[in-house]
Image (cartoon, rainbow, N blue to C red; front, side):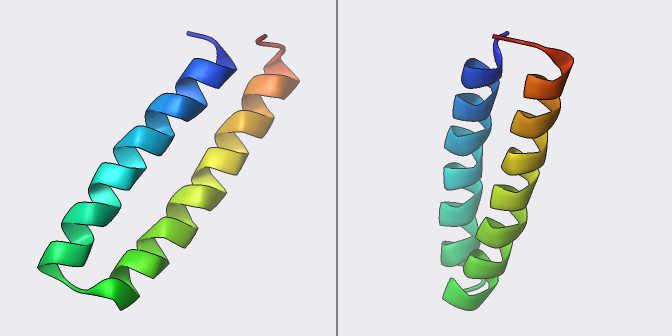
Length: 54
């Protein structure tokens, strides 16, 4: 899987997770989750680029 596909998949999954969190907990928790996920995506993308995936 390319880095682009990986990041896209993570983004789609994180959007679904955020939607569930909004329904179950509320918007504040969803914002916190979104921040954590965005940091994780940045880290994954950086690692993928460093490793040398296209």
